[in-house]
Length: 386
Ligand code: PMP
Picture 1 (tube, rainbow, N blue to C red):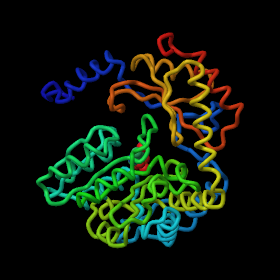
Picture 2: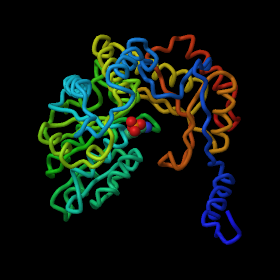
Picture 3: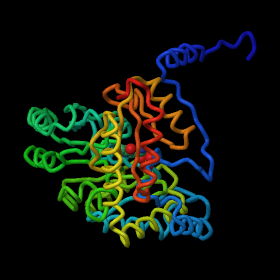
């Protein structure tokens, strides 16, 4: 920079200092490949990301099709693996059709922008994931927030709307506390008022439903023509990527109009092959889903008995309240140093401004793992956490 070049980013320092004072600075910590720490921080709910059946399938897909997809899905980026994954995912979840995107974030942007617009009212839950919030913004639809898990408020907003079309958009399992959306009641409100329901099942696929068919299936709404499901391949399916599931009519519309699908390079073959192998493991071992839920309940029960303010888990996410953002970070750091990796959520990632440790149960955790986790979390807790 010469003396005549103005420092156009000087304001970033002011912002950075403010975040630092509020305990909200973030940092990237590369993890060791052979992590010795017990992992309660990842979203690998079924423990499949390192399963040899999954990693071998990912490697074989890369060898056969290349390290990248080579182009957008509509040009050179669709392989027969993409088609197989879409077919089997739709079949597993009870949907007519599925479309794979290169991330769950893009699947949400794609679905919301393609299925709404300035003539639509989108009714949202206050705890919706950032990608749903951004999808609403990008769609230029009118958005109205209906509090958290409040189908009566949703119905009111739908009844009072001026816009002709309407969408109700919600997570199935909310990512911070792991609580569930009231999907049957939301579907009733939608049907009473001529609205479509879009459900982000990122944390439900592989965990909810008897065989991990997801939250929408568990709510009895699989295959409904007025319900669209979005999900990720990066949590229970141990890979990377996203998908939208719905009627053939909806999926054909997305292929023609979803910009995050059309103008994006297709999902890499290794990710497709890995997700497909993980899905096949889940379908062959449907008990994995119940096991992940059982581990979450056990973990929450033990932490509650130790005196912490713990969420009551319906899926695989368990959260523990921390006294402040700074203490949450320090608590998580001490646990990590003590051999247990835990997540830490602070503003702006928490809708209610309450910082938390975020723990994820995994189907492959043993009772001894849980004992160790509770011991380490308790030993390293700040005094005000109990
Ligand atoms: N929706 C929810 C509820 C999520 O938690 C996430 C990921 N954290 C996403 C969407 C985005 O999925 P992906 O990571 O595949 O982009």
